[in-house]
Length: 369
Image (cartoon, rainbow, N blue to C red):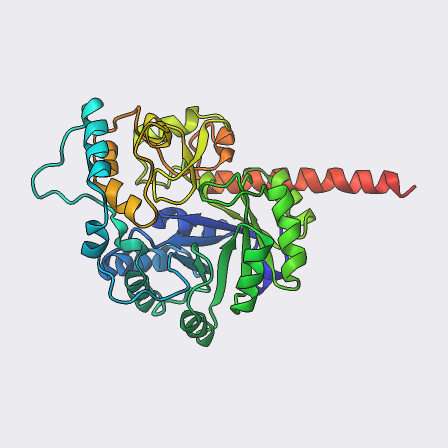
């Protein structure tokens, strides 16, 4: 499963694995892929440094990267308190009433409410980069479009490739103009923030639009046959995120979330604004249904929605309130039917890829006679 891009980065398989779990990122790289650690949950630089130290010590010298979330345009002087003040009272009331309806306990006095919107603010992402550039990362990916020009230049000075996600050929062209090295064509089926176009349509459109830049296909990919299809469409690799959530190395996933993921079918996700204010594919739950109900107050734009629901989601996760408990995940969740190691996932992907390639060789051979 090698391509020009995977050879350039020195990896055996053109499989790029995005994950918030350091142990999963390291295992992906050890298995011959390219592990990419998501940084959005790290609001304290020391925490990111601790986990990058761990990754560096456990990748066996294999390459890895970091994924940040930062806007292309700078927004000066906006604090978390400024954002908090913009949240309407009716939305706060809706959260309180919904949690009360399901009997979700309060957090203990003084207990932190977990991840908040700070991980999406540019100044936080820049502190993450200050840490990350002290490590031998080979790739910097941005999930919110092209990063600012000075960040791209800073990465290139360190021989770090820059990738950005795109949901349309138009977005991909903007990335090329911004000096991005790799475009991740993320289809509608993917977990997290997605656009409106399915992977089968999007991938070749982006490949043609940004040629000769390498493109990674994302969304709806969870088997070796699907990897082969992505490469046949012109991609130089695949970007996988959801598939790792039920891996045994994903130590931070709660047992209740894992059970729900293993039981879910491909039709059990929904593209909702309930999490961040932007459309994001996630497990459908009574929480997403409440926010998507036309009789409710409606979601707020990013970053207001994320800040509004941060404490509520922490409470739901801590107390494992199953009707409300969800997580970002793509439609590929229907294939995630058992807990497996990262290496076992790679073994399955490579076997499926080989079968698909052999089949196409046989078909091509017959058609050539």
